[in-house]
Length: 254
Image (cartoon, rainbow, N blue to C red):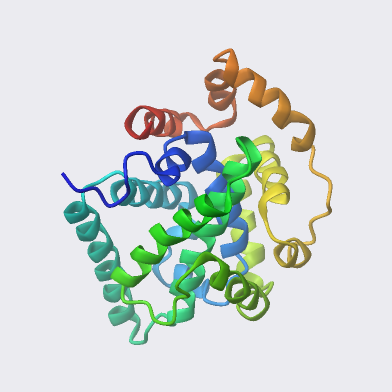
């Protein structure tokens, strides 16, 4: 069987660990709240009304793509595009192409940043591999003007950060929803993890300082993984209704 992502790929290793996936979406949750196209989420009402449900829906799609055959992955990508097309038809206007690219760029950036935070630095070849996987996703979705290589992508990513982000009423409301659904302690952990992952531009717009208390905790967490104590720690931090879904990531994708 031909897989969309090779079985020994670094991308499978990144997305096959639940804690890394959680950090990917922690970072993306911060950046997406600043995106100038975030009003699309308020049109459907799905993210502000159920941010965690939306999170795990996206995780499910990522898993289907990264851990599936070429045929199944392409079907998942096509279905994702069809869902967005239906939303566009209902609203009577199109989601900007740059907004699709921004989401793709988030997955690239936070896949790399989260793995490097929790595991180790990636080589340039591994970063290129991460980029190429999501480049293929973007091409399948019909996105235009995607850089061909990781190196070519870096300045384009910087330009998107400068041009496509702003702090708005949606930013403020979305973070209120995160806090409402997560509770104070888990919300605090979300913010502290975001500080370690987001680019400088995002940090400035969200008024984040440079210090995160997780800087002190992550080395301890890494040690807990060695002695198999990471699962109890994750169970403490995760809302009970999502514990099984998160723990299954390690089983299905590892």
